[in-house]
Amino acid sequence: MVASSARTFSLNSLSNLELHNVSAQPLTYLGRPALRLIEQDGPMHGLAILSASNFTDGVIEVDVAGAPQKDAPQAMRGFVGIAFRVQPNAERFECFYLRPTNGRADDQLRRNHATQYISHPHFPWHRLREETPGVYESYADLVPGAWISVKIVVAGTRAELYIHGADQPCLVVNDLKLSDTNGQIALWAGPGTQAHFSALTVK
Image (tube, rainbow, N blue to C red; front, side, top):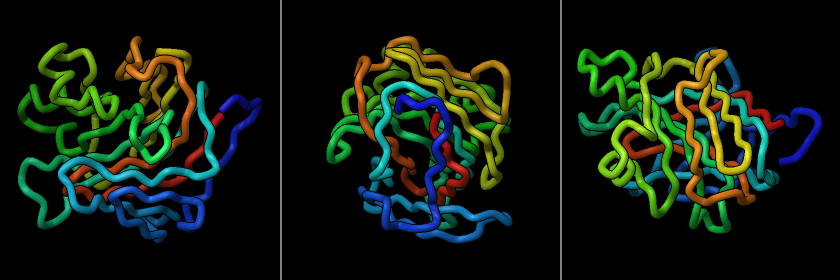
């Protein structure tokens, strides 16, 4: 979205959302208005596309919280994130997401997998990790179920992920796989996750 000021997107109604493989519910979470997403019929991901969004370059800011569902398999990490430049029917999109249970794990390798960039459908996390280890994921201090402030800055084929209001990005991608394109913005939830979103603005 090319704009001179921030636009706030309401998350207290489902009327402006296009749901793909996800259930959604407005509610209050940890004392603030939020939207809860639960991915349905995995094992991939669910999207709630903001119908009125139109995004090329800019800044996306949102608070997210992700935690595994109570009955989720042990390997689930509370996957929660934001997709951008989403193409019609969610056939292609770029995405940054978090694995909150990795943020304070005792295993350093798990910590290094706390944040992730993917490009659906041709560049899933496992392909990127296998072909270019450590390039598209990084460490960040995350707590499952707690609010996490996220900022995504996109310009052309470059995108940066900022966490907790930091001055420096925790993850930098210099080669967005969809190239310099346009699309919508979506809330993203991974398998076995209870994801919450609040205070979404786009500049």
